[in-house]
Amino acid sequence: MKKLVVPVDFSENTECACNYAIHLAEKEETEIMLYHAYMYPIASADMTDDVVDSSTLITPEIMDSIEKAAKTGLKRLKDKLDKILEDEGIKNIQLKTKATNGMAEYEILDICDTYHPDMVIMSSSGRGHKSDKILGSIALKIMEHAPIPVLSIPENIEYAKIRNVLYITDFDESDISAVENLVEILKPFKVNIHCLHVEHSNKDLIDNMLMDYLKEHFEEEFKKGTMFFEVVQDKDVLKAVEEYIKDKEINLVALLHHKRGLLSKLFHPSMTKKVFYHTALPLLTFHDISEDNEIED
Image (cartoon, rainbow, N blue to C red):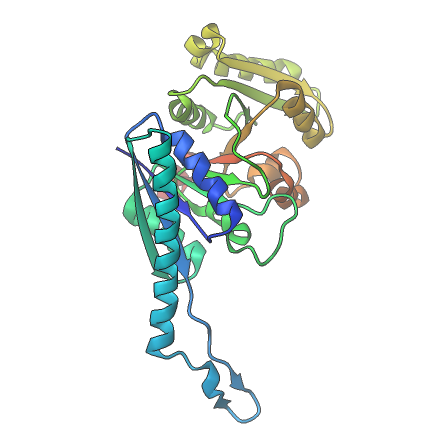
């Protein structure tokens, strides 16, 4: 059975992330864990006399109230999603809930280690980022450290059926496994996968040879007309990607994420967060397995 984790903060964006999780899981036996991390408020002290204001003390009653509120929110969300599953006749998805106390990013990564999900699907702030959106501030951290695929859903978008997916490649050694994973995730759906490399210098011959290598590896999908491979030349990589997205009516962007510089390798170090925070499409990132090998070595 496939397992998905959906971190939630009970905002409108949470429901959109849940919609993507349901539609990605609807064709397979899947367990979806709705997960919420809550934190107790921190007591403050007057730095001049070291006296703690009694109104800020965390009592067992306050802690119990916060935990109950988290569990009540999860139950309310689960009941709503169960009704959606029932109305749409989806019977192969099981919903679970879990709430723990702690910092969200660490708790989510811990869930990845203990629950062993196949993917994390979570809201991000996207365009119009607001610092008070809990998940928006940590989605990038989860992408950076989670050992599994992470799908982030930007703010203020509605679920759209995934028909065209863009995989941005820089011909990294882990691209093959990442694209294989992408193909496996999307296998139950009729989806076109576009592999694109943007070259900003004169290396056309080498780049075309590397793209041909990818094409040969996915020869079956290429012959079926479900995978496309293209190298374009443009000094402004981000602009070229945006134009490709518009031209091919892309619904989801995927790429390899590694600590050596996921987007910084493609664009520019200063552009990394801009691309993440301003993308108007769901972004699916894959873990760079070559880094694991480097650590083991």
